[in-house]
Length: 621
Image 1: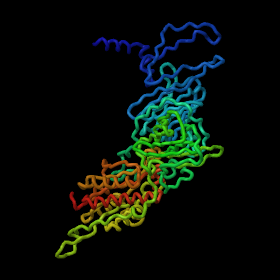
Image 2: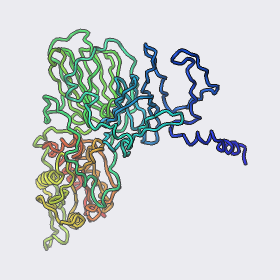
Image 3: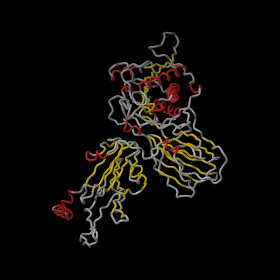
Image 4: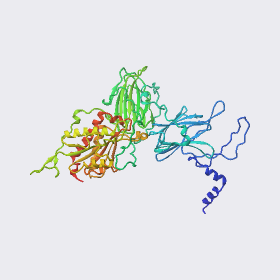
């Protein structure tokens, strides 16, 4: 036997060592338990001998909890905070040491987990990312908040338990991950609060909050964090066979509340890319740090601008730049603030201040953000420039009449089944089948809207656009009906309409996610199956045109699931998901007539481009 094995064998045979190994329950303990050295004086002042065993400190994976603080009376006050953290893929584990008499309440929210602490002094602290699933740690005033990039419910997104480690100390272990389930353990369920006032201002409160002190001195710049991809996760693969993602989700009554609109923002009005505050310039006027308001799926940034200040907004690939004149500010910033706002930064310029709002997702002039210059609140001379940030904010401006006119699509040679017998070749209109998903007793996804209603509405708009361009657009259903009471037979009947003589097949659907993960789902995507050699190219044309016209967040092309309505079609076929009814912002898009107009135009343009570039059934298999 090797010497090391002999040593381990003798160690495990020892009673003391054996009891130590059995008592290891703290996942962060990596050595013998701490041997506590008694105080040199007792409470009465008598000297107490110290143990002869030296203290063996257990190493931790992150920060260590500081010793208890002494108050003025000489009594010891337990400190709570500065947890230890570790990561395993998307799972982030956070461990708090619990002193004697410490109690707490756990409150899961859409923005993370709040811990209200009693019997201990919460050490004030703010730190950035503890791990993949904890984007920010805030503590102070008797509360600890662990901010997560996904919403928490009572049972989803987190798991908490309490245990006693070998040295007799209590620890609270909290784990976070997007797919984690469990919530509080049975022993802690009495310590979970189901609702609480928000720990951070919401979007409406941020507009009228008192002015923060102006920044008069330069501070060290906050490092710019690496942009984090904000693309939502794909739906789980364990969906019913042949059905599009989100079809079985019924979220009505459990959705996160929509963010309040800007007080005077008109949905059909383009974002103001430039503007000026009324009044005369105040030389040397300072710009205060922005006020932030957070709602599910949306973050509002409010800048207080003095009279005479002007601004110009430049949306870009990963954020929004505001070029301000007539104000001054030192270099400063903040980061890891919300899923929609990764960081903000002030930089002095010759004219004033450049403000960068880093979102991590692409913005256009009319999507990804909203802005409004509002008059001063009561008792202030500062106008409020409010900017709402959300990747789900699409272009809701009305289409001009000329945009709704597609150029004529040339006729194509008639197939053998439709040609009229003649000495010369016959020409006919290209035929396209448009499938409004669901109908009748099958509503589809239910949330801010009902899927079967919206899909029929959009399909009829697409039909009108195409027929004006000389396309024989046919709907699989013209009213609130199903083709067959049996779901599988209904899907097959729809797909069979994509038969020879038809050039293209498009199925229109609305997406959804369960309430506990609703904030992860927004934007448009297009599905295709390898039923035809040109289906992938056709799907790409649809996705490109929908994104261009709507400004919606692009979730890209999907092809990793076999869908009945696609695989049973014999022509180039695609299925479009035009938005998420479960998302608080995207759900509002689906209720907006201008957005539905734009979605329909994007689909029609994709079909038009396919017909005029040869991506059709007659071009190949």
